[in-house]
Image 1: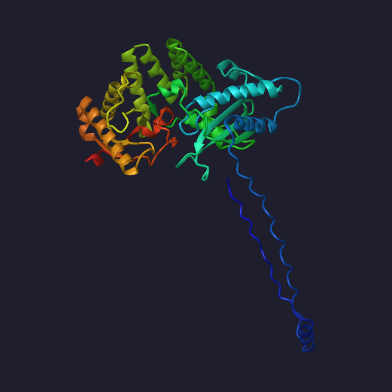
Image 2: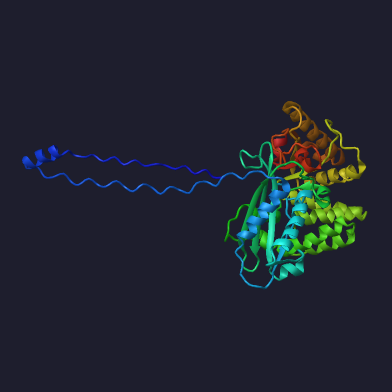
Length: 420
């Protein structure tokens, strides 16, 4: 929260005594110019709002929802106003989590019970085409003292925004803080199984629409341009999580053929659906496109899971079975693009910092060796390094699925001479 500082101005006036004025007139001196009256004190700026008190999860959801709809700038009348909820996400990873899914359910229940003005519609392409009101939201672990997602994360920041798709404007905001106790921040299934993380412009636009706007501002243009695709992606995610991998693949492929369809969620979805359908060649091709997407941003983060305290990959083949494919595709795509890579290991904050630093470097070197074994031409085009827990994305220190991205391995495209 911004801190306002009130500056007080003191005006000092020099006053002449009556005797002094009489002497001046007696000597024929011109009377002194009248003293300029002191300026009016500057207006005191409004006091900063008190910091939000962290609440229990259910109370935080209720507070944010109550604030949102109490301030909603919507037409009065008896007609029902259609509203859709684009599933809430973690504000750093962009992933849907168990907690954000639960918030979505509670918001829908709140609307049905407390807000007769609105009628909840499914978030799909048909509903979005009718330009309803749109709810978006983020639920992000932050440091309570700095209000930022950096350092130790000891509270959750809850943001809600409602927009009018007809005008493209934000019409309501709601915020709250939630205590971390009892919150399940594990990624939802489709996001837990994603191979990699790269900052996605469309998801970034969703987050900005909630976190970087005030009433009357416009929806982020990148997110708005892809809102119909976002609805189709939502259908694809649900199909995937219900085991309908063929349907999910069709949804994802439809989105990928549209303008702006090259999104991380789409490319990940095409790869995962093909893998589940045992279409190994198609899965390899799809994963290669994922690598290309990440290389364009000069950095991609892979979710390799290691045995605790070790450089070896986790022995659960359900998780690690595709790792040889990943390593092969990274090497082949980087070699084909004549790219050189810095492979950077990361850890969570659990344990001693010096040990984490060494472990992260050792894991990065292990990955370098595995890629070089699959693509020998890349051996001289890679260097490895480790940063320990200095660049955590999630930062909760739980060492489970919720903060797997903190134990990632990143690939940064670098100038080839720097690998010497």
